[in-house]
Image (cartoon, rainbow, N blue to C red; front, top):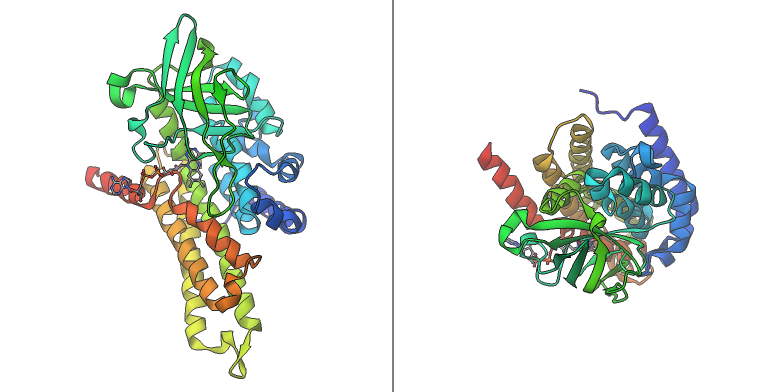
Length: 378
Ligand SMILES: Cc1cc2nc3c(=O)[nH]c(=O)nc-3n(C[C@H](O)[C@H](O)[C@H](O)COP(=O)(O)OP(=O)(O)OC[C@H]3O[C@@H](n4cnc5c(N)ncnc54)[C@H](O)[C@@H]3O)c2cc1C
């Protein structure tokens, strides 16, 4: 067994760590409190060519390696949740095109996403259908050589700022899991309104796009009619592992904040870190962080090594890492005492930001359900 990153991966890790600490950190608080895609961050991500890791080589990218995506997410999320979101949505929002798009669709949309000229979004969730994807109500009906889309989406990251949306809709309401299809919808298409925004506990660029008789050419269908669920699940199978890496980055930031604060806070004539109760908390944090990191990179490595599906391993990683990061950050805030609750404190922001991770891309309950199904099948 070899647990080390390759020299190229280590180089990438060092480069992104320096970028995050030196260039992103000074604007992180302002960017993280903004509920729009942050233009300054997007240009930093584009100019440093990081977005190219979200796109295949033949379409202007560096090729998609889940390990590289994990390295980048871990380092960005440690410093700025918004940088992490802006980065990964270019991959998540474009991957159905990478997976099932025609050469023309790939040539038209992917290079602009790789160099940051286009912003991508992935529109699956609806007001009445999150975990229950097949319960979605948005429809796409074929009229001549056009698809007509009607319905509403909710919780769509980057909505309002994105230019290229992959939208999932029902093309055959009677066909259950085979009745969903995926489409490319460009911002500004008549009948498509992406102006409605959402305000979350921790600022996140997110909105509720609506479709009212929105007409798009037949050729904006990705793959064949009925392949929508396969494309959505194929995308999530690749990207779910990277949520675990983002959780590791946030957990690392929470752990570092606890370590730093406890070594400097003086009380009862000692440092907080001198008390065994604090030391045990720090030890538990470090162990669960390491376990989370191992699960995330094991899943990434399996996927990159060609294992056809990493459904179980990705769910292990996502479930454990996001819950571990939540626990670590909660304990870190406790170590900070009242200072941890003050607006502007790094740990206060992390406490709000980490909460979404056990919910998006499959809640913890859905991960447990997925794992159990795999176990019972095995
Ligand atoms: C910050 C953020 C960003 C997001 N970005 C996107 C995006 O870009 N694109 C997109 O399409 N979506 C996005 N989402 C939506 C996200 O994927 C959904 O919120 C998630 O899938 C859960 O769906 P829901 O909110 O409708 O909850 P529900 O599905 O209604 O679940 C409610 C509760 O019921 C539980 N539950 C569900 N099924 C079961 C079951 N069978 N057994 C037991 N318990 C169950 C859930 O675990 C949860 O606790 C985002 C969400 C957030 C918070």
